[in-house]
Image (tube, rainbow over all chains, first blue to last red):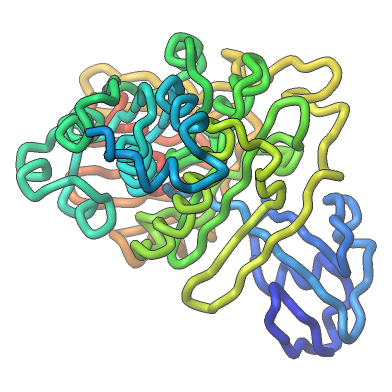
Length: 67
Length: 338
């Protein structure tokens, strides 16, 4: 499956089916993440219910704490 | 002297009117590390009226790679950052009033620091203080600009009370753990990119150009060449306890503060975070193992570095051995546990 993640085309295995799987793949164990899926901001509850498909555009923003 | 701000007033959205507004503005910068030194220099040169800086730390050699204005002499003398920064800024522009506070910022002293402030700039290194800033911002209707960096990655968002979602809407809870500059490192260019965004947004607010604000949450990775800019307005939550219809400002509540206690005669400080923070011992051990000796059992993790040993328990409590100084212990705690 090919996804556009933060502007970069990424090939992922077909085991990845939901937005939650995408987050786990890129940002494991990092609880504070905001996700935009095909132009729509998702609430946290929707991360595990929204499915991803070939060609989807996803923006992943990870809240970090350093400064 | 009259020419001092000419290139800034020639920029038509600012002009002489914007410059006059800036010269009456009071900015509070929390943290005087990489982000804080950068924005403080920016607004000292730009001619802000007053800049208040609060920081609990002193200058160390490992800061000099990216924390601008600090010198080898500051590191040798272990000068408090707020004091060292004030000296440098006053040499740059004597017309800007610089107030330095060497202090660990809490809800109680922030209530005092916020008096007369027009804008808060985030230059902190942990989410606990950011959530306190977020609640203070909502309570006193003062905007603040979130900025954070780790590795080659940075993020920023401008929070306007009553208009945008707040940090609590976006994060829901304070994460414990995660990488910090002391575990994952940090390169200087990402600092400058984040402070460029914070600084531009601050200029817009302070010169009366709110219409030009960016609105989007932005993030960048300068190493993997990725960037993101997303509209998060729909995350504004009317039930948010920080910015919703009936706010209770939970992060200003004593019950939700990290509690510290010096354990008498043991050269140890105990740090007990608020109950919502539960650590992942396994991941924390992985993050810390390159930096010192890590031992782990099912109940706790012990991490030794230099003269200190930090013990993290499953309930989130930490014992910092090798010091009886609460500020030093809190600094070590946030350095290694985020």
